[in-house]
Image (cartoon, rainbow, N blue to C red; front, top):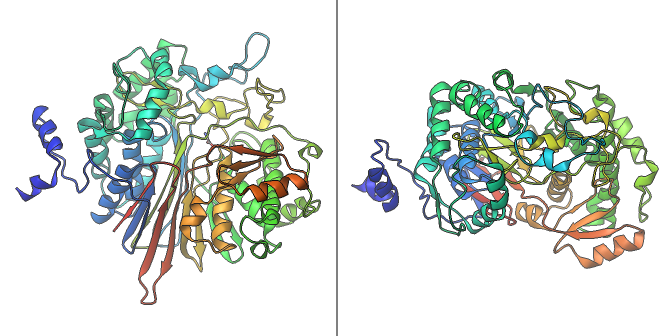
Length: 574
Ligand code: GLY
């Protein structure tokens, strides 16, 4: 009776109604939950974009799972409770530092389908048709997330069945949606109606509102197939058949062969030293780790700490570093399995130092001087989670569908949204697209190639032990947000909470503008303008999830987890 009393009445009611033999027993209530923005404790911590996902992560840690187990379970739950960016139909990257000292990078970025070709998004006149790469069936790359989860299982302690069960329950019995989620689903309703001919859980006769229950029966069945058949439960058999059937409805090109052949890859992470700290971040096909190293190394010898947090001089220095790193991104970076990328040079201290030779304090640089392509516009709807356990394992995962709710196309009968990651390729290298943006050959479309990403899951080590676990969504603003969060802690001694929540800025070489978030000090904007910068105010930048790890005097871990104030993000622990 006590056990039953811990469930919400509704869970019991729904379970009985649907005659399910399995009754979920949880310490959280999916029909009534609150959002906790920070947590400090010593046994384990999880920060993610949704409170239910963070709570499930902590449950897994309490059951003896390690940080990798929790990260797997959290991703699966996000695929249910955070359909805007959590996913089965997208891709991502995992960075981990394990108890034994090893650093792991897993790449499960989507791939271009076998039938993809360089000019597939061009019209008869050779102009890019952005709608085609951003919405509907043709915009989807071959999903990587499920393969990534199984590649991560190599480092997990608990069986997959245990890790996937909370996601199955939340899909099957439903959960109550937040105001932000209701708003998101209402906003994309016209697209959902346009790109879906099957009955889908995200559409109902009237508008969504806060407190509505979202039940995803098709998604629950897909998750059960993955539970029962492993990776093949997604990439082969019924789920693969449903994806391909969906493709055939509207000129999509993902084939059964593409799905069967998809593999996640372990990569060598980008590892470097900054002021005595060791940073471990993501390598290509994400540009994130390279940009982060370039930015940090460009400012390392410039005593930024003395300039002061959000002083005009500090912001200017960081903007100039960002300008140079993003020029390199546009010119050189793409999937190194397909194109030659001069990674060693881009990461060499000598090269990076030379890039700052023309930096003039107090005077705006100019992006016109640099000969390189202009960056394509990248979607900012991605999601990040950070996990730390009691044994010293830490995991940072960033995954995405690209745009919010991806291609807006659900694999009919399988219940999950497909990505529109093909838009992260350069639709037409060397020629401006409809936004006047250019990309380069390095990131041109080719069958089986991974599109360039900005996702930057990152771990900072101090004396060899985990110190900061951090990441954020935000498209091209991801590496610059990480750059700021890390400098905020290391150089400006900001608290973890301020490092995450203080207003951020962004420069990406082109357009040659400094973008500042609402709340960014007007006096600093004015100083930047007087140095010659174009300063543009914009909507919020990123949703950073950060865990800072220290040791108390008696040697106990002190895990301080902070969830970004900019969304429903939640920090949990025990
Ligand atoms: N789709 C956003 C990124 O991969 O950076």
